[in-house]
Length: 73
Image (cartoon, rainbow, N blue to C red):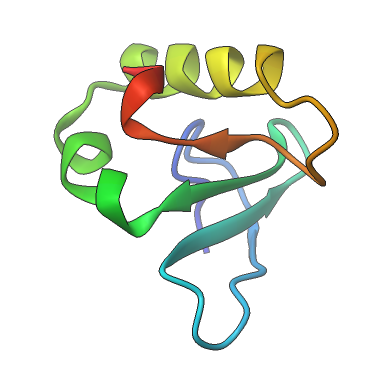
């Protein structure tokens, strides 16, 4: 699959029953996008997606990986 942020080669790490997408990208790292954010994410430009991931990473705290939420846009 393609990374949803940089469009490079990535892996789909989404577990069953997860409301959203979990992506493993060698360039962007592992990250998740919540299902409630999917419409905003799909309509965002590549720079907006990258900025949302960067903001999610800065707010990550103790989570396994950054989670892109509505607040990141």
